[in-house]
Figure: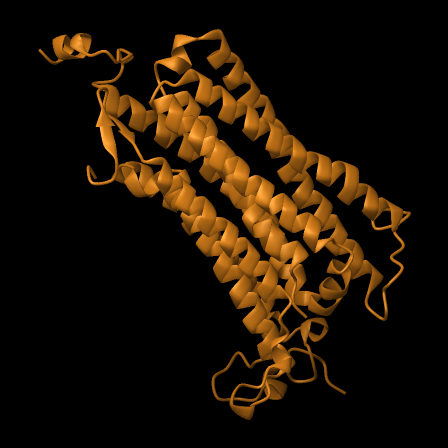
Length: 147
Length: 225
């Protein structure tokens, strides 16, 4: 710890200004990068002569934007909020909010799998529902009345 | 003996009676602030979940709807908030060194940047949406639907106003808290001038507000096709 800045009497941990300046510059560069990346349409780029499908192109854009956002957030939390240099107890509290948030996103599993349920209005297309019995086709066990 | 050593120091430590020493007191304050920030993560987290769900369901409509947002305005506001986070952390730095003038300068700069953010939001961005009939409600009438769903557009703009509105509310509260802190520094109140923790806690709140915007900016302004 003592390698990062100096200790004043009163156990205060003071960090050099250049550390904050470097973090701010990094944040600014990442902001420029994320705006620039959003203008790139990856479906128009042909690496090795391959064509990128619109779905994959959109996925690449999303992954880049979210990766940069997470990087920026990490820099702010670690250096501006001093979590990198904080006590273990503070670290546990800081991390718990983000753990909770990632658990909450598991709710999307429900929405994502509704089309698998044998409920007619939830089916994305005829027969997208899954059978409740292993190894049998949906049609044979579906509760949906079929004509 | 330890208490004697404390009294000898130029930096007088104000350890309240329920704490063993200054380290425990500081940790208690920081953990308490983080516990509050965790509830804030839950508060905003639910809205990010709703956003993710409808973005997934109506990707094409959200893509079309986001074209009405101004990327330059969003990028300028992102830069302003990042700069305000920097001035805030500088205020904390100088609070540790007990440099009153530099603390005041940085706090005032932070309030100035926060106000600039709100002015761009309230005087340019939001009126611009109202002019194009993009405020959800009976008057909602987007001009460039081009085959996409009007209801999904309304969902996008409901989320836009709810999430950036809640964030703007946090900025307003932040300005008030930083203003109160600057007032205490100006008055020379010992609770802030001889203990950097109050300034650090206000800083933690302000960086959290910056964190929320770091995610709002790409999610609303930079949606890919």
